[in-house]
Image (tube, rainbow, N blue to C red):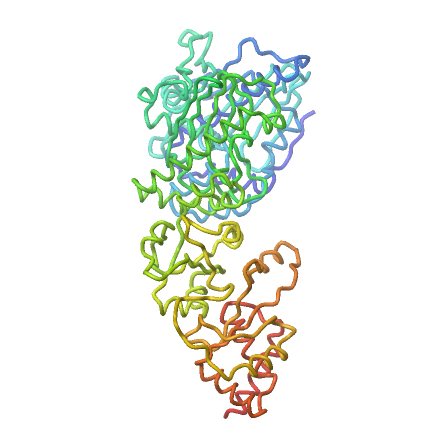
Length: 615
């Protein structure tokens, strides 16, 4: 029975963007459809290995491309895994992925074709690209091992129809009813076999399954139009940059070129070949919970699984590519892979290769490294917490904003080279923004001494600094924690003991200690923590995640040379100091570091009363 169903709202918007696409290289629709067909063939072969009883046909797996100039159609047909009716509705009628609305907004706002292409590619919506070249699309599909297929059809207007297809063969056939050829709009004649052959050779030559053009017809042939050579198995000198770029697009569903290509192999005890890529931009879902990570795993050139997490740690989740191992079982599970000794050894070598590649980029191609770090550095820094074995190598490739330059970040090695005589630590400050940190009272004494301070504003910075105690023998120290000894031979001011004791009593609910500061030069007061204490920013992060952190009392430091503090000392010694002055000083210190007052209205009332008295 025929059924008409509405596309999900986001899918409808996406279709409209495709139909009215300004993307000039419309040929890529065929790359996307062939790539999907290749994935379906990989999956049906894998299904036959995993479950010997499932009724799947794997004798002659292939992709057929059939052109019909008279009817102006192009059909892409595979005998792969196929889809059930439910899968068709889920995969094509809806886009079940968080971030969809945000992505659509970005696509609409994209000012250039390149930006649009980048966003489309990041989202991995290959099937929808058919509507760039077709007025109407039909699909007939039957899931391997099931009895009945389904026929899907849509003109991309907002609805699609579903009908039973009782005689459908295993796999999927997609027929595009092509728009008229239009050279001005870069719409080529996709019903012409020569056009189709050219696109396959350009974009899909490396696909390991045979791609046949018009098989069984006079102008057609059973001979595949693609060379079917696995890129990772060919010598490096035989593979062009363009071929690498197309293969990267195939495995990553990114429409941009990769930033860097890496090859490695091993022979002997266990053999493998790997072809890895670093992207030139951060994937849209890099920090989304359901982000898929991992590279494709093959065994003796047979596809085993997508997104093999066991081969790539979480902090390198942006790395894409292929690992082809020689000695693994074909029906290996993800759980077994986590424990497999060979996989663990391959993983170690892949991680080492990626870190070495980024290090070489940092030393020899600074512009390329700057792109890498700007796009992916936040994720890499997560490794400082999770990968203790490679912590030093990760630190070596990290760059951080600092007070040394408003524009150029610095490595820790470069920081150390600039350290003046007498400085014995690498100093850092953490917070929400660069401007907030630059204006923080915590930096005053360091600025006066000419000491550089790292300005760390990424959320992960709040956490990794507690896990990394030193770099190349030089300790890392927070400007906002603990006692600061900058080597100044200053005498401790006298006569403040009573003031410190009185303020400690008055502010006992808020602070654990009041003491004189050696880190302030112009501000009257600041708040500092003990080493190991949660920072205010980290407390905010916990609350944003719905967790209430334990209350941490901090230390209030006073600048003994500031007129406000000396005036308060005099008032206290004469018995004229009032509690509201202590509370104002504490509130000012909290605001100066970007903190939140517990009771803003009470603070404003107290301040207004004090100002009124002064007038």
